[in-house]
Length: 613
Image (cartoon, rainbow, N blue to C red; front, side):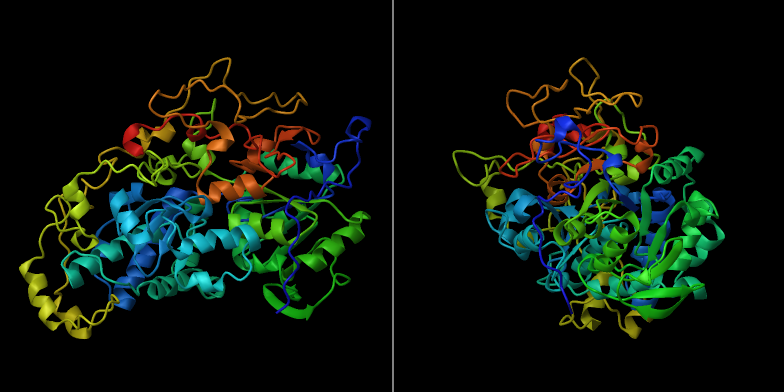
């Protein structure tokens, strides 16, 4: 299989654009203007089209839980416990350690900022026992280094041991994985962690049954049939001004394209509801089932579409045509087509997308003329400086347990040591094998479980149940009255609404403000040197602005995206030549300015309470 050559990720798609006289001596732009691009492209799901995330993830949870219980023999508690009872456990950007059954909040270079075993949050000592005192003794460190050097190329080896939850289609899987680990520990090991887990292939089978593209046409898998019948439950309609904005871009000579991983039938169903039945007339070319990120790396052929059927594969750009749509394909040939139709060589392209691996890292690493803008609904959910949270499902996107998508307080340092250990000697003596033994976290196994254990083959660490076990109904799970053990969580009892990242900073003269749409000034955003209305405490002095970003995916956004917005709709009321802020870099490649628009997330300016550190 052919793989593209790695490119300098500091290159700009707009190097060749028309320069004003004042710009002639400027080597790199410090702003982004849509007017500087010849071609402007979009991902479809969660970018062009938005979903009602709350109802969608609950429906996905129920479908996947039912599959695991009824088709893979998992414990009934997965179906009996609702998503809402632990909804504050989930957030985007977590990574599953498949073998250990731990969920990880990764930071720069793969350091583990926070972790949970199942649904029980691990303390500092437990994390360091599992991953070393530097919190990097794990393949997650190699994973982060690989992303920085190679992007998504050659990620197969990591998929065996790690899985990162990057969008809202597998979002509720986070909670299911946590609950599966809880059940396995209780059933097989008296509540103690097992040496390894093998449930992930079953979860993947459930996701495939829901989302395999052929399921839409045959009304199978549960997800597609429901979204067909009730699109209003799951898909949001765009306002008329959004369509007018797309038309305005084309009227100004911009070549508009769509590259989506969704199959033609599902994508058309979603876009028709969100944008209108004539949605494809808004774009010059549409690519379905693009199979990103390899679309930007490999040289896979395009397929013509006869209705919804793929026919007549071809390679090269000369059979591509405007006002047509295709399946699969590759960026190399599509880009040559862009140069032909725009008469610019190279053509400058801009691409908007929500998946950091597929839509940001891949284009950045393997194209020389495509800039990217990250779309992150977390900005709406967490709230931005001067813009309080207004996401309709903010409670499902923001977790007080895992903190902001962009920032998590790092472990305290003391006297040059790796971590400041404030725990008692008794806690130091507690082994990882004792996790879950205390009465404050789990109750002792019931008599039913003891009887069951006599019949179970303990050599198996998977969660399959035998026919006899299913018939006897001998599996049950005991837990504290609150459901998930509470005392281990630093934020127990707090709702998402009371999360520190939901507390908006008061606006004042030093608060970063959104520029007026009618103006054409370069927005200042919330740069790291800007004064914030929320002053740090004496005890903790944490940098503010973009320099505070420390989560792995937050770092990828500021390093590889030109800018980050909460939704395409925030651009609708601005003129095409408006100058947006970008993550500008100095001569050494260090980011020195914020590219969040319309403003920084509040978490980069508001100090978290000491209890969250």
